[in-house]
Length: 203
Image (cartoon, rainbow, N blue to C red; front, side):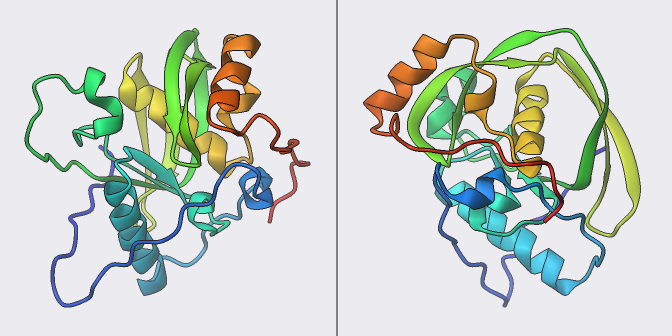
């Protein structure tokens, strides 16, 4: 099971951070592995959750808040307004936070199309190519190694999206339709942004 983090509503306030937008070079940088599982990691994760929920997101990778570390968070059960069509019937705020540190897809198969958006791409949505089934190896917030499988659902798609962020890859790298992607970027005023893939060198 994926390590679950309970949001800390105690004395220490979490901070909402600015989300890095498409075109920033950090989004093309391959992130560094986390070595120290300490209080600074926990604080980073808490701030990421505060930022994600405040932005109506269901996933966030550390590079999206300007930190080039191999950390991602998810909450695909949260009834985000950005995904209302996939959250039918969920009117209350339901929290099911998940943290993956140093995640790697160790097995994949099949293919599916995923209609996606991204907090680093405001108002941009288009279909992306994803694996149908994946097995992920990762560490939890305490550094314990874990592994789990996901197939064909929002969690599977979101996991691949966020792991791509950790590898300097973006959803514009794997569109189902180039025309659909360009049209969506143009509507959002992002069609002139330059963001070539970087070389795969650890940061």
